[in-house]
Amino acid sequence: MRLVPVVAAALILSVSAPAFAQEWVEFVSREDRVTVTFPVQPTVTQTTYTSQFGAVLPARVYSAVQGQSRFSLTVADYSQIERILTEKAKACPPGAETCRGGGSSTGAGYFRADIAGAIIYATWQFMQRDAKVTYMGWNNIDLVGGHMLSLTNNADKSRTSAAIYMHANKLYILEGTVPAGYPEPGFFQQSIAWIDENGNGIRYPTLYHQSFPAPPLGGRGGRGQGPGGN
Image (cartoon, rainbow, N blue to C red; front, side, top):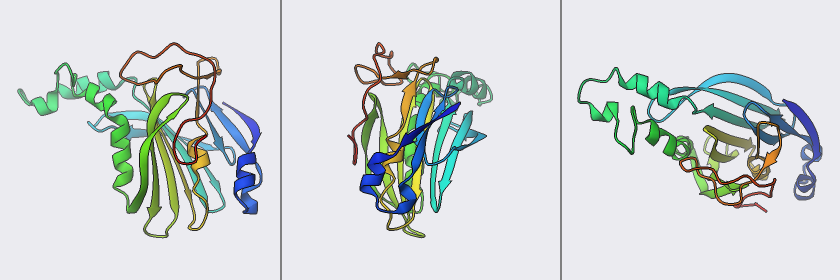
């Protein structure tokens, strides 16, 4: 991992609070093949993530705090989900199809359904919070599709902006929360970009979807679509 300083020029222009008028950093993780702009060097925590169908997957959380604002990126590794759920299905009672799976559309233990629905399931977890969802829509970053959400948390009226993507068998969940009255941290959730095994930025020429063969790789490109997007 390495840190590359970048100046958050757009933030300085759009946000008057002195705390935002500072140098941010572009954090690079070759392990998770991703870059994200954080206010400071994030802390990395090894953890697990439980999928919709009960697979306990290895995950990492990159987190940073700036004053009262919090930013995090959770990356869950789905690369072994077929093995995990196939093994889990062996403990199901005979004939319990809703436990065992096995159909062409589901796979053993429902691993295919788990991968296909990973973004929707993660979106649903946000919707279960004690918060009002003020926006939810589709977005893409360098042609990798995903979901974007905005929430107002009922307890303190703080604002959360989130984005969820699935790329190369990994689920990426970005979340930024700022105090009431602050501008939404949409800049954080749209700062994510994809890199290859050599650390080079990548952009697809057509839309990427986890369940289909990846399009041929092109050069690094622009940002996605959504509220506040370029």
